[in-house]
Image 1 (tube, rainbow, N blue to C red):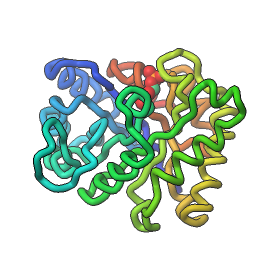
Image 2: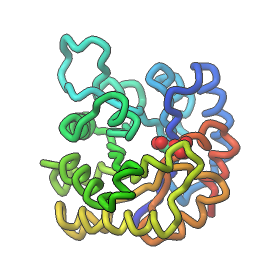
Image 3: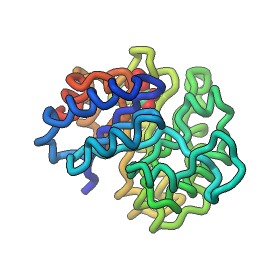
Image 4: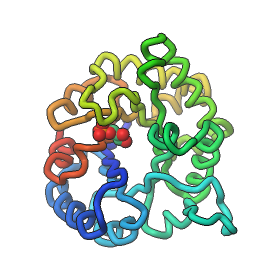
Length: 251
Ligand code: 13P
């Protein structure tokens, strides 16, 4: 049984006070949601405070990125996975399309960051997804397969227990243009078949695959009704406690 995951990626929004207010407003609204894991990903500077304020609740805290480096060292501006764990995170988003597109994240860095996250005892939410031009050229499945194969390279079957995949078609992020439930299912099925090739059927059956891209309270239920959709990675609609709670409580 794959327990669904509903995760909110707050991207570069909210100063500390607002992050805490939103987290505290969310807490009672999702207190009875046992059907899924609930995750929020505030900015680095809010992680520790938000995690402290959510201690004992059913909401987990994720970071949005981590360093490829695992040891202390002269890496100005970097934050290691161990530091995230130390700040109260249990998860980290790796390889989000905005990082691949605008911050030159590569297949190689995604792989190193994923390994760094696992070494620190974090769950890695590894993001994949094609650009519009790639979909239009008919290469979406190949692109996503390449991202998976390289991103998860060298990971053992045991490592895969701490991996969540997020499929986020770039053309659906922040555009209000959601993939149809059929498009999501088609790609999620492809991702699961790829995982079966790389890590075996059991891993493929057990790995949660989230959909992301303009997920809203009014489209979550139909997305979740798809066989291979195991949750959502939500951007804009996760910024307000009420709308994110409606997505969490989709059942
Ligand atoms: P939106 O939900 O705003 O489209 O963002 C999706 C996303 O990028 C989540 O990581």
